[in-house]
Length: 152
Image (tube, rainbow, N blue to C red; front, side):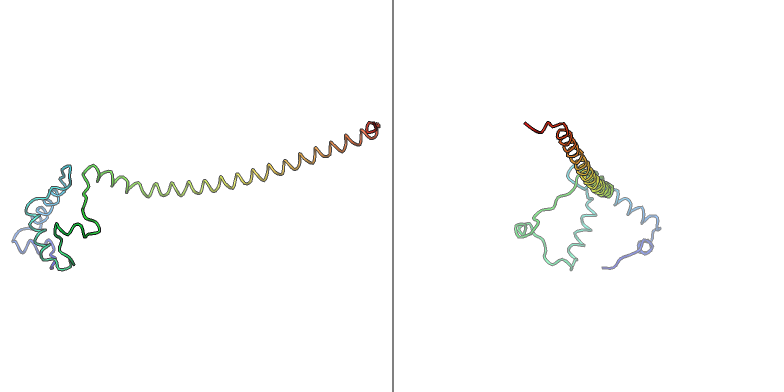
């Protein structure tokens, strides 16, 4: 299938390049008008699509309505305008959310390291306190021995 530039199409129809661009823009505008179920496609575009579909030799199997049960995906769903806007919003949010998740993971790792440090610190202080208590017990025992309080 041959592709044409806007200049070639304008020469083919004997009109200006701007006229061809205006026709293409009109078709695009018509395609972007949607109803609640999907795109509204003008009849002339449908005819063009049908002609392209019938001349398409790259399609392996021609689709028929009774073939639906043999297909892996038996139906096609289209976005409504609202669903499409929501989808666009989610797609644009994705990099930001991915970055936030990565930052949260790094923050979590830092918190885990800090908790480990505090646990180590607490255990050291506990050791010091236990040694102090042992020292006081020994001192009390020595004083009691000196005063003779250890005998019945």
